[in-house]
Each structure stands twice: as structure tokens, then as C-alpha cells.
Amino acid sequence: MLFRSRGFALKAQDRAIKAEESFRYYLLTGKAIDPRITISQIIALRFASDAEMPSLAEKAVLENLTNKQIKQQIKSWRSDSHRV
Image (cartoon, rainbow, N blue to C red; front, side, top):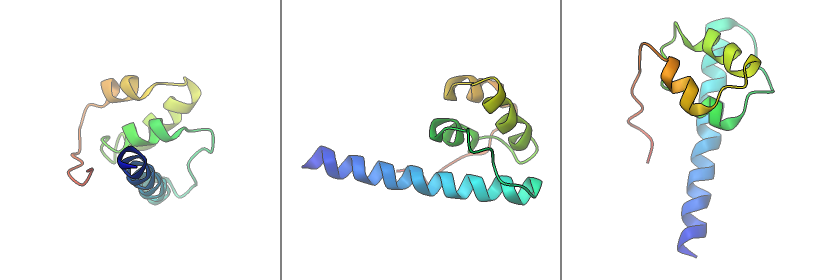
């Protein structure tokens, strides 16, 4: 029961991150984020600065980058102190 409740909380938080980062991408570009992008890619992109995020999101989809590869390409990090 404990593991299931923890998994539910993480899944809900992942959905919130997806919504926030999709909205952030829209604010920065004026268009919707590519539907082929995965949740793990979006979670990694939350650390990218506003200047880097749009181009890195497109590159992540085109080159099928892993979350680790995305994080390695971020030059200007923004912190995420809200993750539990």
C-alpha cells in the first residue's frame, strides 16, 4: 500500500510537470510542444533555461535524446526546488 501511494504521488507530480513545461514551451514559442516528446524528456527539460528550452526540446524529439543526454546539454541550469 505504501509503495502504491508513493507511486501515485510521483505520477501526479509528473503530470503537473508535463503541464507546466508544456505551458512554458507555449509561452516561449507561441506553439504547442511536439506530441512525440516523452514525459522523461519533459522532466529533464525543466532544468533548462528559457533561452535553451525550445531548441533543446526540438532536438530531444528529433534525436530521441534520453533525459541524461538532455541534462548533459544544458548550459544554463534553473533549479527545481519544488520536486518532492
